[in-house]
Image (cartoon, rainbow, N blue to C red; front, side, top):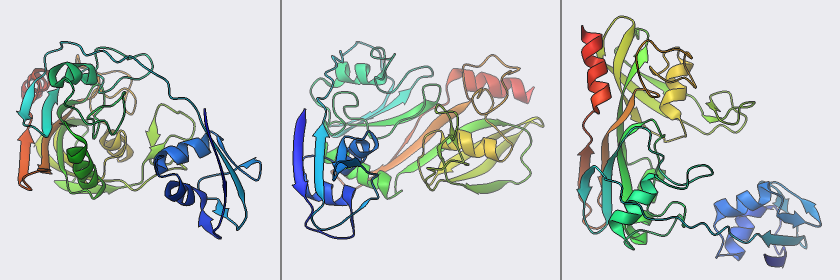
Length: 302
């Protein structure tokens, strides 16, 4: 375990900001994690990330040893939409977890990408998420971007932060939407009582905006396109449920029973648009709808 002991030479400055400046080898987000897990003490007491320091405060930082996980490359076929020396864009299938996590250390997209790319992956997100800039849920299909080097990763992570990446999804929702198009502007954060869910009524909610438009109507169901302005966890699923139109097949935010044989929500990341990190050219990638989605649309049209 690494230990740091610092004395504050500043007044009225947030501790996370102070430490990210002083301890340049540790990211601000990781400092906030250490604060949350009470690995950082000020004058012997645990404090929150927004704690304002005073001159002379004694700060003790304990950084736990990182858990070494052996993430093994696996020869899993990838549906590649685009590839060059900087980026890889894949069409993720339903049921595939993006990166290893407790209970899912194999058969993830990361295992497949490690096999395909070898050592050509950015290391910014560490051993668990090499090359991964953004995620989509296990049962969401479609376009996913992977970075092959740290420079591309940093540039694209900045585009994501600035909301300049185009992300258009297609979904079938329950019910008949009144309007042809609309916007849901509601902060999203961890559910106050169910830690596996997200909610628009969260104490830790962050701004979230989803624009939607109707593509086709089926009476009891509506086929829509959603464009993300922000990218919070489960954002489209939470937003559509919040206006009374949960995504068909979503048992977490919608009805427990579904009249169709679906494995999770009917949500597909169709179009992904980025400014290429090396050429500066704007590029769009379009992931074709998966077979289950096409069959569902056929059934609904009948």
